[in-house]
Length: 274
Length: 292
Image 1 (tube, one colour):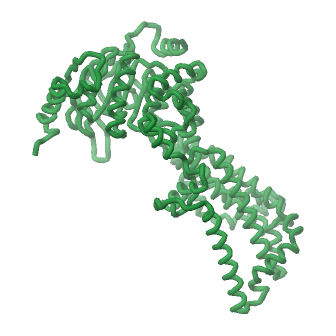
Image 2 (tube, chains in turn purple, blue):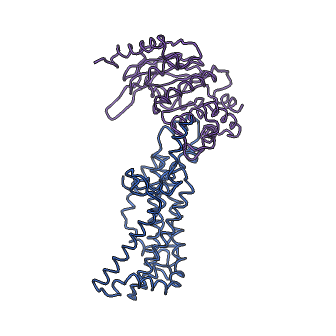
Image 3 (spheres, chains in turn brown, green):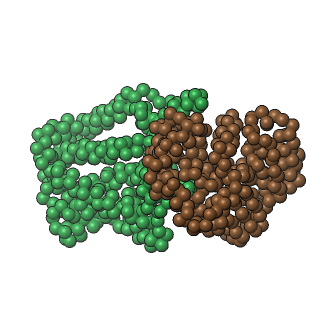
């Protein structure tokens, strides 16, 4: 309730299709000691509400920069970004962010870490406690509410970070290689769990990854970027029916999707055979 | 999930067990020994030190008013226990007030400097430059300004103690992963809330490292203040004993001061462990910091 009121206050009275991201002619140039370094060039991308879009590309291609621009944490040099009807300028708060590191607070319990999001927004954490417990339960952390972060494994910590990103029910979820620091098996399980969670909550999601398989498995669309300066070279729809199961990964159709993305990386010189 | 949890419990914080405080050996990844060595080694080292001292006195046959035997120092200390006890409160009060002043000024100053670039660039050179002034040389000046009461000792202790508080707090506030700040900005949190709920708690390990150094320095400051101009306190007693060439008493006072400072720095150590139980291995962290 308070959440809706807050959103209304921040974005004006007009009803908004909150989850749509519209990026137009976006460019970002960093000023460094070596002069101007273009990071992003002419990015045009529209993400519909409820869509799960992955950004894949080589390291340093500006994927993270693009995500930070969407979050309003980095100012774009040219072009514009709008989420719903709000033009993003300055930190955009109707969002949940998950980084590669879980970034939990060691002095808080698991539950306290999830409620950190709510407290920092000046909302009453007691009103969100049952929701926090429910979220933790859904990611398999029921019974761990009173544990401290150091008592959890890497995968469990990242689950807590995901709950923290969802507790305030934002229309938009931004994830910057959230599983990048996890071992392969934990990672597989996390993708399955994330897929389920996103399907249940119908969030618009922007997901950054290096893993082509991860991108194909999770996404409605996979956006492929070039090395610096980052541009979009391909925007591929992925049309596997829901619910997607792990067995999908062994099908020829899945391999075909992966192959298309590999061939794009080969054609732009990111991957070479010799 | 159960496998994940097994791994997790294996990583329980070291502070829960005595071997968590394992000193230098732990830095090089050696397996922790039994807790008894934590006490045994320092005790043995201390006994060895006393024996060496006694040996030097016997071999060189140095006169008692130059270097007294450890036993004589102990004896003199017991005889003059009243004197030591009577002069301790004044010194401890000066130390405590000076330390409190250093914390009360140092931590807010560090916050202000981290929060504002212009303030940082104007204050930081001044702060570092002020460390070039030998503060001990200011002691007589303070006596001229503030007389022979407790005030000049408090100010002396504060002047010496506050620099490590400022520097450590500032370093602690700055050392946070910038993505934490990206998170709190995306939460729309006002700066004060980011400081109270994120930055200050996460800087506590460094702040406490600074507080321990500050406490040790505050003791030096108070003693120096008393040596220059006072009519009570351990520093004053030290000057009188030295004037009488009563070396046994001088050394007894020094030993007493060691005990007092162990107690005071130990109190900070205790406060640290109560305030930041999440700090896994606070001791090795500090060593890394000092060495690095």
